[in-house]
Length: 246
Image 1: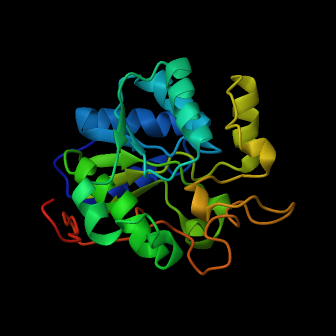
Image 2: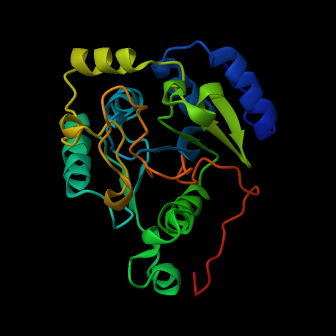
């Protein structure tokens, strides 16, 4: 399968989505690697469902850059899981992305911004670090799935994201598909899953969910917020500034 890497991102994304919309996740990742080579990264939270995508990616390209957003407010269990899982899967290029000190000093000096403005907190701790890191890539892989609901119900397998191409290899998979793959390949679960956390982010804004609730119901519970911001559309090539020397 050959791809025109000189095509505009929108044209390339549309063609790839048409060809890959029913493909196995491994096929999607292989196509992404063939298309973008060293200009491709995978963004992972090392959360409740991350092991499946990371295992598939490791089987395709173990040195694929893995971008991990260490916000400074993650559960200790997530940090331990990130180290253990990366070692088990043989991932050789996991990059820890942290917010710039100047950004935090400017907008969140007391680390309490999450109490008053969760969007701004996510912006400084997730969006800005990821935008900076992605500047060197032409495309990236995410772990989003349609069964998470909300805006993800219409998630394509391949889409345009500003000047980049975004791949969502697990878009078509259900929770049963993920569980079956994890069991078959004996992948370790995030330690918080058995405590009622089916989706895991920063500790101040992540709660356990009740049986039957939406998988992401514990994220920013009690608010209208459903996304941290890294998957929301922004101006092509733009990296927002929060002030300070960044």
